[in-house]
Amino acid sequence: MKPEWRSRYNLAVEAARRGGDFAKTIYDASFQDRAALEVIRKADDSPVTLADRGAEQLIRTLISKHFPGDGFLGEEFGDQPSSTGFRWIIDPIDGTKSFIRHVPIWGTLIGLEYQGEQIAGVVYIPVFRQMYRALRGDGAYLDDIRIRVSDTPTLAESILCYSSIGWFSRAGRQETFLKLYQQTGRQRGYGDFFGFVLVAQGAVDLMVEHGVNAWDVAATKAIIDEAGGMFTDWDGTPTIHRPDVLATNGKLHAPALALLKE
Image (cartoon, rainbow, N blue to C red; front, side, top):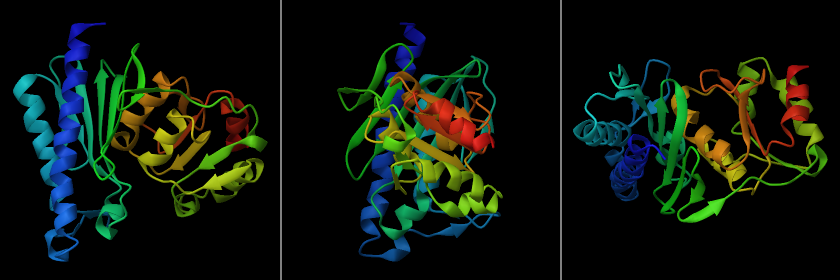
């Protein structure tokens, strides 16, 4: 294992935990005082809180202290070029709307790229104190337990996850999504990062999304890849730079793509 990969991976785990725990202090405080959230609307009308911005800033500061030449792409503070080939892709709170409403399924996501390829990913769920993590060639883990995708062989036996049918409707792909939906055995709206890590641990078999950004999926792609699954856009390209994504146990990828391409 390349030592420059391993050292950054270890730091990603620490940074995600610190950033997520910082956000959780505000989350906990907001049960007693809603004003602690200080919700602000971005230009696209999506919400952001001081917890989002504070957590990302904490993560960037910690990483820059150890690896000052590395680049960043973050939801809250944008792109910073790299001089080393490494780039950290950060979503300080994936599931901000859940965070605001006190739904406990939100997480701090850090993906690590080297020369444009995802080599590591960390997903920390502060309320559950759970850490999903993966480094290329080292496997995928939930805390210290090795995880792997399911062996479900057919769509008819599968469990499908998605965030919200509204995303497909706004993209004009509602009917396409419903074709896949109707071919699967069970469907659950475990959205945001959560559906992806459930695929990685074999609890569900597919996660389909439309409307994501790179920071939403950089970490989860690395985890799914190391868990033995597949992650692509709806054309079958393994990229994080498209709004349409599909993650599966691998066995179901081709039949799912065939329906999404129709």
